[in-house]
Length: 312
Image (cartoon, rainbow, N blue to C red; front, side, top):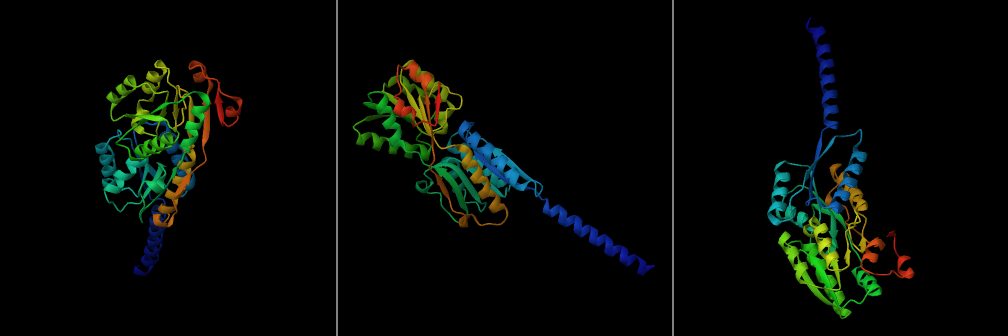
């Protein structure tokens, strides 16, 4: 009797081992994501990230993406980071410098992949447990385009002093403008009441930095500028064609896909510090002729040839 039971026990143990191995191979990975507010640029980046990560793990392992969409302020960024750390995710992905820095401030051992950072080499986000990708836009080209369309003596710069990458964009554009004897007017958006500054200033044109706060109220900003007959340029795409005269931006999908590739490598065992960060420099240039007509601006044919897209 005892002899006949032993083979049965061996079979049962073997079956349990196989089932345990199968369960382990399909164990769920959790990726925590911080996407500031509901900014379309980051939304497109996140959509590309999710699609690519699902494709990489299809049929291999379940991957859950836990998304946090905090309001753009320091407390909300920190709270979002702490929630993901407490949830014990396997990896954190952040879009934009403030969300990235909020995670780094918590000094967690959870690997971090960032995307959507402006000039990541200047953002001080390096570390053994960190990698990611960002972008660089040739801002001098924006002034060059503006000057070919109208006389620019004063340039308004919309930015947010609570967003580190937006501040760096403001400072870079201010320096470029100074070299061309163009005065700049600071328009610091820290809350919705900051939009009142646009009512008080009358620059010849306005440049909008990649500020999450500014883009939460982009329709209001453009409505004020339109009433004051002031054209605007942006480094985030105007997907809704809501009134930006020109946009010069790095396509967000490429960053989302690269962030997914980096995340996949880390989930499969690679160390973040061994994955090189990357800065995208390819840009899309869009001119909105509908807005140009509204402002009485004629685009020279030589300028239109440089555009990737022309909105008619």
